[in-house]
Amino acid sequence: MTNREYTVFGPAGNSEMFYNAGYKKSADMPAFLKNVGLDWYEYPCGRGVNVGEATASSIGYNARKNGIKMSVHAPYFINFANPEEEKRINSKNYLESALNLAKVMGAERVVFHPGTCKKMDRGYAMGILLDYMKTLIPEIDNAGLGDITICPETMGKKNQLGNLKEILEICQLDERIIPTIDFGHLHARRRGSLNTEDDFARVLDAIEDSIGTYRARNIHIHFSQIEYGPSGEIRHLTFEDKKFGPYFENLVRQLVRRKMTAVVISESSGTMIRDALAMKKMYQNLL
Ligand SMILES: [Zn+2]
Image (cartoon, rainbow, N blue to C red; front, side, top):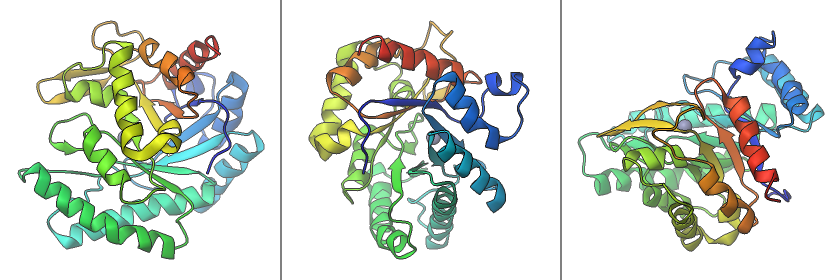
């Protein structure tokens, strides 16, 4: 699945640094990222897959030319725990549209938010979600999209499905599924649970215990500092924040010690490139 030797870094979407340099088009991102020294570009489709095929293939072409790997973030509207079948089918179509885009771009991974429990009991909602996703995986294979890795994400608000345990349960449906561990979300949903290197190590141990060393080393990571309140996530911050955390300093040594070949995506607010570079520098200083 991968032949990476090291953990790699990149931004989610086009950050301030890119626009301030005078660029506008996503097709210019891969060369920009290569020039600043990053490895990966996560293309955001949270509000829907609204990119034409010509644009998608030119982004993909430039990514290959510049040695930049890619992932796509699927639309936020996905909810595989919706009790209405019609809405679950709509969710499947959103995921498939992201997978099709990934195919055109040559992206390796598609990140998605699996669902929400609304007023249902969590276990009941997870039951709906898991049953539906079981039927979805062979459909993805039949559509010729099974070579793209789907990466369900840990979520920041308590009413969203996607605590660590729930995401690992989804990953147990198929050995090709890789979790997106959004450490900011995990920290926010428990109002600040990741404060030391040991706190991060416990999360990484739980992942390895559940899905094995290979996948645990290759996880997709979203990292940003996040403001939180009683129900979890409020908003994404930048690395300037010194109040909420979590702090990458507490994770980076674990990435090196465990010889991880993860993908780390910065989801800072506006400063994704700058903060991805800061993380990459901290990591390289330990190699
Ligand atoms: Zn996300």
